[in-house]
Image (cartoon, rainbow, N blue to C red; front, side, top):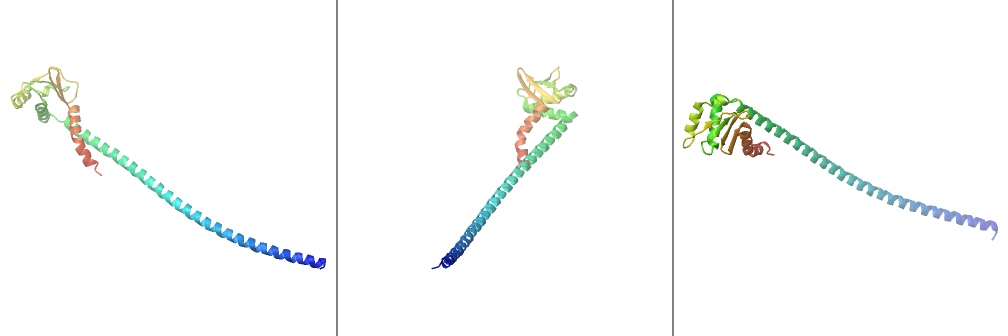
Length: 196
């Protein structure tokens, strides 16, 4: 065989081998491309699912946070309303005068006196209200008859009285009585006001 034929044969074989390698490379590239396209779709679906879950979790977290803030704000407002209510009630009681005041003081003394012989200490500026007529009515209404007396010195509180006998002291000033009433009724008021 001549050199030209050998070279021609080599060229043909090379060309066939190159074409075969190109076809194989093209098939492998298509297979790789399909595999990576599938993997990309899987990753995209996975990322979409994760993003959806993360978004749902973030939304839930934000909702819970907002609900908590709303509850806190509602609780603060309800406490303010309760405080305003107590303030108004305190003002109303403190504004009582004349017979209303004396009736309330008599009722407090009768309900809280231990022996009926206590000394009554009036609030600052209220000694004149606790007249001998008040004392007579109080002693008469006390079960078994009372022997109450009015102290010479006034107390340092603004409203009500303090009962003293020996070392025993019963504080019936507005602050103390009101605190006791609040302690007693606050659970009921709170249950009504704060029910969900």
